[in-house]
Length: 138
Length: 218
Image (tube, each protein chain N blue to C red):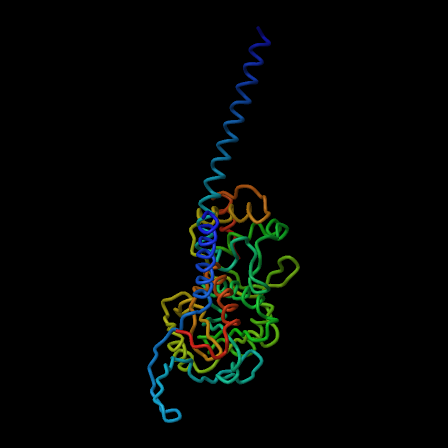
């Protein structure tokens, strides 16, 4: 009797965990697909369909090490543009990126797309994190 | 009997194929044209005079003067851009790089990119842009000159450019690539933002390279 209760509880916990996970998964997919559309209209002209950038003019988005190291600055770059020289894949880029003109939720979506495409695999970047980072723009 | 039908069919097929080849091999000539009648050896001869690209005088990324004559003997592709362009220029030049790579060793194909923002795009700015794009040598020139002269020239390429403080980056322009033959006649226009149109441009350049020099295309 005890055993069946324990098994039942265990099954319930597994079910709950699984449904939570798939809820997260759905949320991630929402961010990702919205971000994909935004990327096409706002980013792709310069950064390319495969995030390849353009020679030494426009940096690629394929440098996971750079994206992880600058994770808390990316939202600010998208919102306010970027003028400083940056080092991506060992190459210096010193052009200017214009502000993207996106709302915080859109920035969260497009960054979720970028951070999980082009060989990057960094998971969801939700609007709460985005707002936190946007509050600390330089 | 069967054999006759079969051979008739294959002859038909063959001739239709070769007909297609022929019609594909000639690119149209764009722009206005007028018939000119002159007297040659006592005979009246009527010829068609096609619109050609007029003379110009600009400076390239190396500081060298470039005019109409500098392009003699070359098929060339022209476009209009500016280095600080935030909208369609990066995608245009990502696609143009494909054209550059395809013909940089062929010797008779050039690319000229006219800056429509000469105030910002000085010779050193254009040189730096070319360097960053990985463009070397004399197959792809980035040209700057008087703004009015560039805008006027754009009209003869059937392209519209203008300043507009409301547009992104301060200018509006169409992202067209214009194909010009050795006789300086326009032979094709392509949307430089679309990879499939740029593939067609590359194919059309190859067609032009194979066109006999003295052929009269209609």
